Length: 485
Image (spheres, rainbow, N blue to C red):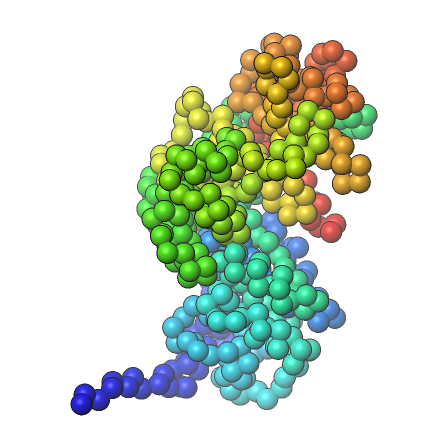
């Protein structure tokens, strides 16, 4: 009878060597120069506040889709701690996805970290665990760590937002603080490219209030960058790499989309037919911004409606798509959500799956709407709506509605257009004007290519602003509001 092959266990010294390699500041006092040279995300300040807050006995769970800069942000946080005088040998970074740490729990890893720096002290540590979803039952391990080491700050991150959000909601109540890092907003794109000199402050009258806004005397250049943002701009690495932009499918599709669809979601949820899920996502990506119905999708694809509903939930949890629900012309919600719009959370996913778009392409308007919605849906505490209704033989639609949290009545309305036509012919905005009149809205916003100004029609003040500027404004406001929450 053949003997079973037994692999020798990984030696402890090998693990200690890896830990020393991942934590160069134990010797040098600084993070790896590669991370040091990378520009911090504009969200870094908000994130590091949570890391530096040691009086609150909670772990920080950094969530977000792949390749948006979570690992880089953790290293920037390490550098800030070092700059603030924290002992380098009280900071540890561990990438859980490294096979060398296979089957090791967080407590065991913490013990090995202390052995690597020859310290028995359990207080005042900062522990960073990257790609936490690769540890089975990570949320149980993290809960135990928070309870067992109250004087240690623990920060974890993971790309599988589906697992992280699910697990932290179930087990982390009172012990975990979540921080969602979105793809780059257009505001961050402009800042990263050092183009903020092209944009200047302005103001806009909206529903009786004067609101902070922005404008530009270089709209042709801003729009050129907005087009690039739609095609390539969601990922920090891509916006500076002409090589990746020349073949976005190779980088974005293989390294981001495929790993989520082919590895993360199947392993998390036991999905059997990966090709079916892939085809479903591709269909949604191609029609991003369009109204869909599960009944129609089921009939056209031959896939059971309940299974499609699960796929949609998985894709949304993985931060690849976002479902936007519908109200009627009086802003009432429908009892059964038979129709809704599905948006990519990042417009550049579409160019990776198919091909980059030109501003004159027929589908570019839908991607402009996707880009603007993607700025809004980073506000995890707020969900925009869209309005669609039938009146007699005519149908009406308004692209984006904001409902007041208390009254549930419309607070604002936006019509997204990649066209200057309606600036010249505002009377053609029949659905928007009808919706405003019916819901007592005194003003609304309409996006254009490069026209801006105010026109009153039927007693409604229509604020026309370029789509690129509006996307920038939403990104600025989102960052400011998150800082106040």
